[in-house]
Each structure stands twice: as C-alpha cells, then as structure tokens.
Length: 128
Image (cartoon, rainbow, N blue to C red):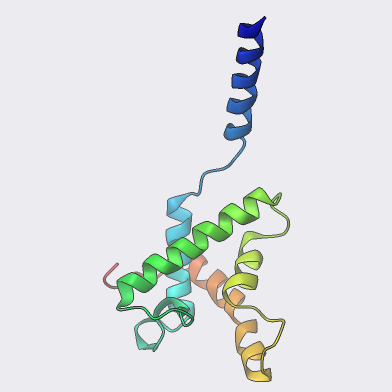
C-alpha cells in the first residue's frame, strides 16, 4: 500500500514539473537583440535600456537584460500565459502607464513596435 502511494506521489510530482515550459534561449536572445536596437544600439547612453541599475559595460547590461526577459517569461508562463508575451514584457521593461511624464509615456509607447520590428528584421549585435 505504501509503495502504491509513493508511486502516485512520484507520478504527480513528475507530471507537475513537466507542465512548466522551459525558456527558449534562442527566442530570448532574439528579444534581447531587438531590445538592444530598440533602445538605441551603440549610440545610447544606456545599453539595453538598463537605467535603474548601474552597469560596468555592455556585456553586463546584456546579462541583466537576458535575466529580465527570462524572468518575465517565467512569470508570464506561470500566470497562465495571459495576453502576449511581448506586451507583458513591455509592462515590466518599458511601461506606458503609471507615474510617467508625458514624454516618457509617448516615448515608451513606441517600444513594443520597435522591438517587434527588430525581432522580425534582426540586425547583428556587436560584441555579443
């Protein structure tokens, strides 16, 4: 009887862990590359749009951006995949609502369009 219960618990555990989707690293890299170009590429003061944390160089900014995109994907997946992923990412990365100035709201409104454009038309990122 104990063996049967143990088997059922193990089976339930395996089924629950198999339902979580792993982050596709190729897709994450495409999104991160698109964010690089949408945020201004090599010309920008804030590579990958990382402003809230001081970063030493572009490589560290890319690592933080990659972590943010992966983490946002996990949250989106665990919350039932409501809406589109890029729209969820925009709410975290570049919000258009809340305590923002008119210029911030207007500028952030173009972010999603730009990221989608650079995902569809990828450009190589230097020093990747």
